[in-house]
Image (cartoon, rainbow, N blue to C red; front, side, top):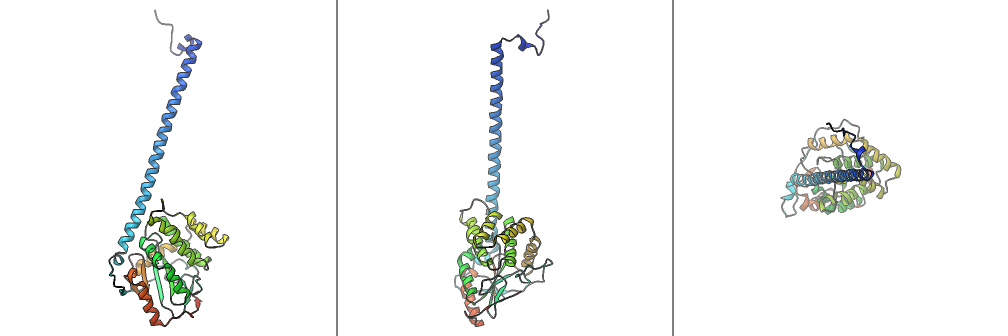
Length: 305
């Protein structure tokens, strides 16, 4: 005789206590499945974090390695302190975008005795530095000579010119270069302090091991506030960087760097010649150029545009 227990009707033959036990078992299975799902999600989260960390560490390693390769001349230079120069000539202009105010026709931001972007010390030798904020040797140069260069500009001995470029292949290279150009035009009085602070507070941390990631736009905006950039300009700066307003100009400034025959940062041009052993001879090279020009501390800064 066929069974009367057809599918779907078994529970109807359970006692009240059996149904409660079945419900408890079902709830337990659901809880166990939720726990397994949570473990899987946690595992994926941990994996994602590890992947991101690996990418960040890989990017930092690439920056450090590229920076070392790009400045081989400096790494192997002699310790004599005698300047070693090579010929330098500006290439054909690569700029089609409008020049920001206080930026020269080769993408440089000059600083004279009043430490204002766009000013020059008439008759003083020019010290021009091509740099990327994420270049390890650029950080070495700034740590070793940054304050001295700023002081020499303030004393009227040199006109200091910074040429921001983006050669390290990271977003922050382009973003920080764009910030330099923007602040040269819109906050010229704070430009040099911003430049120095980004190196000392953000870039250096990448290479001394104290940072666990590359610098962010928000951190850079924090530096701008810290050095006294007006609030309205800070807001415009953040929009300009995040919207890519100056991306074309940064790209053209970097193309100009290549058109000038330069291959690595920092590239240091002292009075029209490229100094290949800046790490051992920058002070001597500048002193000789100052002596030859007769520049003195009573020089006054004049605006370039």
